[in-house]
Structures are given as structure tokens and as C-alpha cells.
Amino acid sequence: MRQDQEDPYQRRSARVYAGAGRAGRGPAGPHRGVLYDAVLLDRDGTLIEDVPYNGDPEKVRPLPGVRAALDRLRAAGLRLAVVTNQSGLARGFFDEEQMRAVHARVEELLGDFDAWLVCPHDDADGCDCRKPAPGLVHAAARELGTSAARCVLVGDIGRDVGAALAAGAAGVLVPTPVTRPEEVAAAGWVAADLPSAVDEILRRQRAVQPARDAERVGTTLVVRSDSAGDVLVTGPAIRAVAAGARRVVLLCGPRGRAAAELLPGVDEIIEHPLPWIDPAPTPVDPDDMRRLTARLAAVGADEAVVFTSFHQSALPLALLLRMAGITRIAAISDDYPGALVDIRHRVPVGVPEPERALSLAAAAGYRLPAGDEPVLRLRADAPVTRPALVGDPGYVVLHPGSAASSRACPTELAARIAGALTAAGHRVLVTGGPDERTVTARVAAAGGTDLGGTTDLAGLAALVADAAAVVVGNTGPAHLAAAAGVPVVSLFAPTVPFGQWGPYRVPTVRLGDAGAPCRDTRAASCPVPGHPCLSGVDPAEVVEAVRTLTASGGGVR
Ligand SMILES: [Zn+2]
Image (cartoon, rainbow, N blue to C red):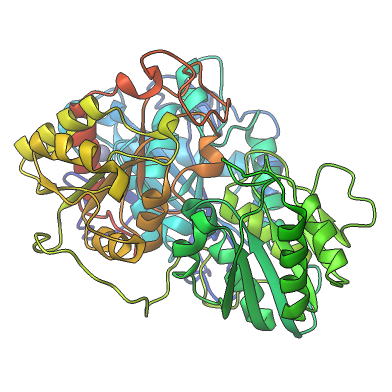
């Protein structure tokens, strides 16, 4: 183990050490994984027993099953790095020589790592590497020749998960008795221990790779009903289908139409509301269903891939597709599908929606082509009308509303956030749909420019793409930001799981009470007086989150 010479990140940034496993390994090459190239591991409480401020190699005790779990990752071709806060260096409890001896002992017991990234600072130092700051994750990704989005970090406390998300990496929490309940509640991905985390990392990696590729067929009908956000998170899976089909026809609902227009890989769109999916359905009209069936038959699709959220059923549509003569149908269904589905796929809860959809595409034989990252993306050629009043890039977009009021930021809080961001020197653009103008006007009056009702979805996407950060709840614009690689301060109401619906593969800070009583209720309007999951957010936290996300190393694409 040696400290790299002339490291430019010494003062306020991570110390970088090559691990013993570094020898003979170049940057991640053509055999890179589909989702991940590297697993980053917290040290104390994750790999080894937590002995506070330990400078003694004799006290290194690996946690159960860790060596074998790490060897499974190594065998799968994943790079491994340790990312560790060691404020004991700043406080003088041990010196660098002692720490290196500890790390040598860890490698002796647990096998080689490709790199060690150490924050030697204390909270008071204001560095950019002490977790939950994202600096160690960015430094690890650089060392390993990959990007933060292609890393998954495993750690035992909220700081670990926070650092992962702030860098745009995935974060797995493996709680110990010292992990606080609110840290467990806030984590989008929780595993019982490191071996279980490794099992799930490898399972997710395999799940998006087809056992064998579909024969290149003529027309594939893909289906994603519901709202803009639902359609956007299905984008990677639709691109995978498009890579294996000559023609892709997308059936979407009216609420998702504008988002469907933004997706790459879609050749034709059919818009039709599905009364078993729409959140405010009209009664089922037999004539309307007959018209839809005839329209679907006219597509002449060789097969259909029906994408749904974890709480939606693909089966009613599968019946119509059968009646339309489609002979090969793939869908996720926990309910028994009988003869309605040819490829019945099942996914555990907690998987991010984009990966859940990618895994269905993989079950049907489709994969993203080489070079197409598993991230949200929009068409480059979407026609855009930008509103006046926007100014140069680098502003902060504040989007208080949501189609579901349970996921919206309370207006009074959004106004205080606008005021705090403006006071901190940010240019704030307040966005919202035509029906949210009253809210955006009230919010912008506290600081910022009111753009409520001035953009369509494509215009909003363009606006978001030039932002330094977006402050938004769990709603469509969060996914527009993810598609543009723009960091998100996520005011996330926990009505649905953060691990499934949080902004995907983009630097994110999650705020709000993840353990509020609305958790996992899927409620469209807040079931709890006072909207407590978000009303307790302090605007100063939002300002601090924007600072964290826009400091050097933020922004991923
Ligand atoms: Zn540091």
C-alpha cells in the first residue's frame, strides 16, 4: 500500500491509497458490469468490528461472512474499494503509519482491495470528503476508472448512504445496533448484513441481463400507463427493447403522453387510458374496450412487454392483448396469470423502478446495447420552447407541486425555501403546471421567478437541464432532472418506497421524515393532518443540500 505522490486532493479532500489488488488491473474495461463496476465498502462496522479510533492491527476483527462475500464480488469482476471516515487522524488518536498497518491487516484477513479512500478530517474541517459528503465516492470512482453512478456503496450508518446518494451512487445500509431507526427508515436499500447485501447486488446485476437475447423481431408493443414519472422511469427498459426490435409502439395513458414523446426508441405512440391503472378512472365502457382491442390488433405486434408499477396489475391488459391476437406477452405478475402471460416475471420489493422494468425487458430477451448506460435519458431532438425570464444556466429550480398532493411540498414551506435559497445567493425559478399557478406565484413572491404554467413538459425538461440543482418532491420533474444528470434535493414523502421511486442514478440528498405515518400508504392525498413528512423540513437543510450537491465533483454527465 502506498500513498499516491502529488495527490491534488490532500488539503480538504480524500487521501487516496492504492490497495494491494490494484496491481495488474487497468481501468474498468469492456467486461464492465451492466449496473455496477465497483462496490465501495465502509470499514468500521461494515467490514470489521468497530473499535473506535483503532490504530492497532491486532484489534482488527472481520465481521462474519465478510471474506466470502467479498470473494463473490471479486469473482464477479467487481472492483472493491474501502471508503472510510478516520477523524482519529485529525484528532491525533493514531498516526498515518498506524492506520496503514491496520489496513494491511484488513487486506491480510479479507483479501486485496483495489483502493483505499480515507477522509482524515473532522466535522469542523469543512472538507468535501467526510461522509455524508460525496468526496470519497467521487475519489473512489476516479481511482477505479469508473463513474459514481456505476458504484454501489455498502455501509452501516446514514452517513454512508448519504455519501452514496450525494454522489449519484447506489447506497446499501447494513444496520448494526448503533444504526439509528431514522437512518434505517430513510435508506432506500437495506440489507441484514454484508453477505445479504452482496447477494442482492449480484442478483440485481444478473437480473438486467437476458439469459439469451430475443431474436430480432419485427414490432414490439410496450405498455406503460399512468403518469409522466412512470413513463420516464421506464425509459431505459424501452431503449433495451428498441435495441432488439425493428419497431417499438408504446401504449400510454393521457397523463403520460407528454413524457412518452420525450423517450428515445419509441417509433409510435398510442394513447388510451386504462381504467384499471388510471388514478381517477372513468367507468369501464365495453365499446371503448372493444375499440382499444381493435387498435392494438392493428399494430400487428409480434409480442408485447407490459410494464407496471409494483402496485398495478398487468393482467386486464394482457387479456385484451390476447383478444387482439398477440401471442407472446411478458409482464410482471405476482397474481397467478393463467394463460394470459407467456413470460411471467417477478421482482422483489425495493428494486428501483428503472431496474425493475429493465429486468422485465431482460426476461423477454432485451438488453441495453453496449455504451447505453442504465440511466434515464430523453430524446435529444424534442422540440422545445423555453420561457423568457430564465437567464443563464446555473439557477436552482424549485418545483413545489405534484399531481398527488400527498407528495407535494406544502406551499408555506416552499415559500420559505425560496426565500432561504434567494438569501443564500441562488437564482430561483419556481415551476409548476397551469393548474399550479396560484402556488407558484405565492412561492415566488418569497424569492425567485414565477414560471408556473409557462412550460410544457419538454420545456420544463430543457429548463431543468440547465439548472445547478432541482428542489422537488417525488414527482415527474425529479425524473427529468435525473435524465439530465442534474442533482436533486428530494423532498420525498414516504407514501411509496424511496428505494423504488427516488431519483435514479443522479446525485441526490433526501430530506423529510421517512418514518412519518404516511409511509407506504400510497396515499394520493396526505392521510395525516399537517403533512408531517415534509412540513418539518428546515429551509436551511435545503440550502446546505444544494451546497453539497453543487460543490466540486457534483453533476455526473
Ligand atoms: Zn475529509
